[in-house]
Structures are given as C-alpha cells and as structure tokens.
Image (cartoon, rainbow, N blue to C red; front, side, top):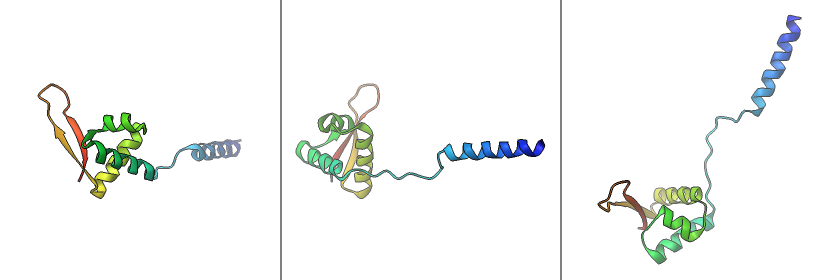
Length: 97
C-alpha cells in the first residue's frame, strides 16, 4: 500500500508542476507603431507626461510605459522632472533628444 501512495503522490506532484509558470524572464516587446505614435506625438506637442501620452494616443498605460523605457534606453528621448511648488510627486516629462 505504501508503494501505491508514493505513486499517487508522484503523479499528483507531477501534475502540479505542469501547471506552474516557469521562472524564466520575459522580455517585453513593444509594437513598432506604438513607438512611432509616441515619437510623432512628442515631435508635434513637445514634452509630455506619461499620462498625457496615454490619453492623447489611446495606447494602454503599460504599453506607453514599456515604450518610453525602450526609447529612453535607446537614447531617442530623455526625461526630466519639473517641480511645481506644490505637495506631492513632481511631474515627469518626456521629450525627444
């Protein structure tokens, strides 16, 4: 009977392992049209915040964040902080280099 239990436990454990997500790193890919849309918007309007970019383009917030990070890393855009003299977080603006 002990052998039967260990076989069942092994099967049950193997099934659990199949459903678990792997611990590999996932690299996000940003659609090229998102990059183009954001670059065109910054070229047209000048420096904008992430919220402004999201509302003006209609691109999902997470896609805007990922795209901005990719553009920052590649050196296409730069960011700067503008303190407005009020409480809270300062506004972070993105602009073309």
